[in-house]
Image 1 (cartoon, rainbow, N blue to C red):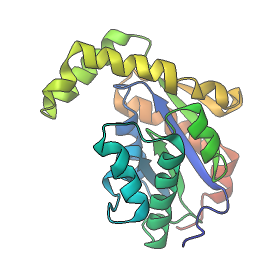
Image 2 (cartoon, rainbow, N blue to C red):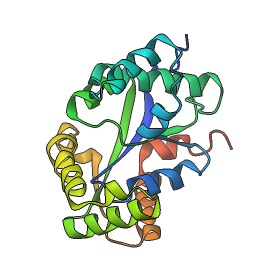
Image 3 (cartoon, rainbow, N blue to C red):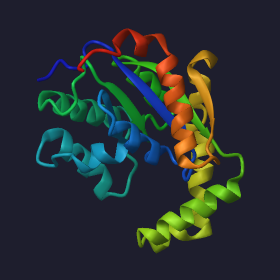
Length: 210
């Protein structure tokens, strides 16, 4: 079993409501050397359902039940260990870029055992109408017509407000950077990168892995 996460690993967290563009920004950052994008969806898609932990996940999902926080984080840790073991993710030189996980404060607390979160980027979009427009456009583009309904969109935004947004209060104010998500994506990226390269942890490790 990998011990890749026995020592806290440096990470950045991208937080935002559905439609704020966090997945887009995470993917772009993950394409840059020394940044490894870890989206919650990728963890579950990579899951080997033949394993004991995979079967536990199937037990819940097959019943249409939410996976408990403890199992979610266990699955996440196992997959990150797998990525480390296969040298896809290099924990000694890579920053993890988290997107879609943690989903709530209890998950954030569990992950703090394994991670050192150096900055939380909050992609802020107070205009919920704009978020709905983006989500509808994406759902139609991906041919997920059910996800384009106003009911589903409003439910997803409400779930974010109730469960995920409180994560901002879990971390100290000094760790949270507000980013205007209504800007063009390249300007959002510029704001994120500008903050990252100003951080001491980045400057201390900037030449590693070159």
